[in-house]
Length: 169
Image (cartoon, helix red, strand yellow):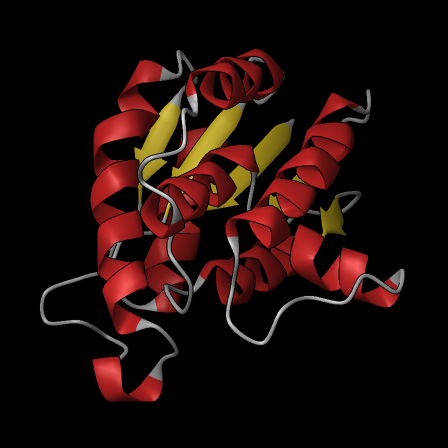
């Protein structure tokens, strides 16, 4: 099964992915494209730019296009696209959205980790809290249009983990 975990930054995606990895023998974790690109030598801007996110989008597209099974993806093209739109709302993203829809068709389950009320990560403890909220709102609107089986998880880590494990069992 190919599972993509999406959400705004500091929502708990990586923590959930690592927790699921412990309970899903034989799965591999594709870490966030940002970190993979950084390891490959890509130098990101001090303040995020649309171009930085387009680089991540393209890299994520390649990761999702691989024909591997039993993979957990920490972030995917759709949440990266949300950041592009928030940073540069005047940019025409229609072709990028179509690309996202196309590669997301290869995902078996989309796990959306939304911001919660009250927010589990106070705004003062995260970078770019305004971006975070806008990305969360966009994802709430977009994910249901992808045609991918989707689950929205909430609560503490153990509850989130169990929601996903029950869904895939």
